[in-house]
Image (tube, rainbow, N blue to C red; front, side):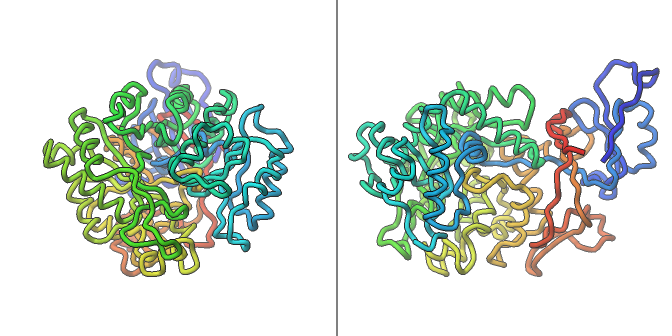
Length: 551
């Protein structure tokens, strides 16, 4: 990809929005499935078409980008992130993929010895005992020794339990009396939330800003033009969300849309409005996570004699949805287990009976994760107008016959998780995200994970998955016109070095788009597992270049 800026002259010495002409590539656009060029004026797409027709705009463009065969697509939207935590993992102690308990403890020791915490609490993420041959997390004594006596917060890969050293535990008032406390092992439930608040409260402003900048920069490098930040009093803080929105407003990276996960009965609607959040939802926890044994199930876990944790009742869900609907604000909930999802559906239906079903549907209230859905629940999502904000990389990480899902649930229940194809068939809007740092920012990897789901009947076409990770994210925040490259649309796009473009339906049972080239369906990169993923060359947000690859 090469760029040129025309010299000043009669054609460029004019007032008006700056124009950029991209030509000589492939433009993924429903306006013209064979488009090779695109004109951007200011922050909007002005035209898409052929290279031949683009000649008419070449003399008046302020900049010409020679694509040299590159692909231009709408920028991705990651519909569920935690920017500060993701940035801390990018810049600090990330135990994701650590092969053994011993290796994890060695990494903690090295990080503590480096003193990379500005005098505050050491923070790390990503341990997963199910992948270690030892089959267990470290004891408190082992963790204290590795951290050298420092205060350390170390979240599990699913962020629903954590390890905390003695020094951090002693900083947390009333910890031993809280539900989920364990004197020697991981902390869950209220005990986990308490130590997390303690740890994050001790982040210095410099630590927070560096972490948030790292997340926004990484997103831009990956062709992500917008992020949905899922904040709340149990997962971050008002200060954290405010700082992130202010940073994003500087305009140097992706856009950020904030969600505030707090019940309306606790002031969540007012707080969301005051903070500038687009919804009172996101990580408003109805349950926890499967890996931490806190997702709420109807039946016992396969490897534990309980059904997980319920944080909210159907009645609380109903009150929150009704209050948000009355306020004209989108609501949302974190729900993973089948019992938690049933509580959400019962509550949303009750709210519809109270304030009007059409009013409830119109706001497209969200459910984050929505993993354990059966056919009845999928139909209810469609009936109630709910948006499923889901993370295909969860299946890539924990699905399959030897994965964590099978350990926790057994094969039968595990194979039913994350039924993307059923949701698409039912017309349920999908918005894809990563839940970073739970899984990393990786948009093309996410699309691949949905198209090549480890349970074949849940696979969807690459086109449908790509739409869920681009336009789906915009629709989830009520911006139906965005996420597509057509004249008049916002010019948020990415340029990719990609191989052959294909129309890919990886399983014969997928209700995908026609793969016949004569259909005029625009192609996307081949995402067959093992094929290299596209590489981002340039990311543009509302006409502003926020990332450009080194030549």
